Length: 146
Image (cartoon, rainbow, N blue to C red; front, side, top):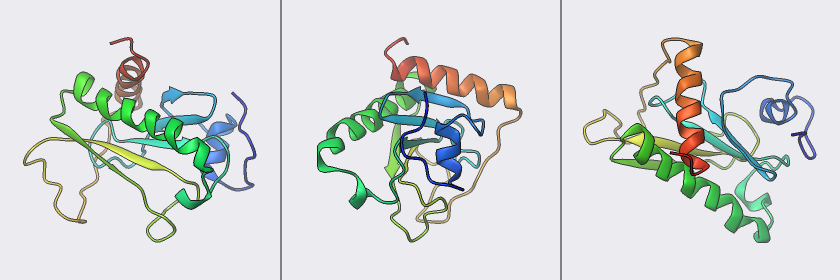
């Protein structure tokens, strides 16, 4: 689907416009979710609005419910498909926001997984094929096709 109101030079807008590849987990008319290229844990997903918005305060109030319903489905997918005990759902607004496009991190979590405070170890997928497999599993669950 073509991006809505992409900003020049925005990596996430390039993904929504198909100009940059990503392992897509959820493709909705108003939002897109894809695997983080530097995941805290395998399955770490970024949810973005298709429209270029920089922060949560820029998201129209009438879009909040639908946007966070997507986040809710992704969090459920972490547990049902990846066997995670729970999830971490978070966003930054400007400070520590590596890409200036609103995005929500949905990260699978397990007890004693090594995530402490804000010192977050990053992981890598063993291969592009492994990342694609994680994206496909999460996508099926988020769409209700477990």
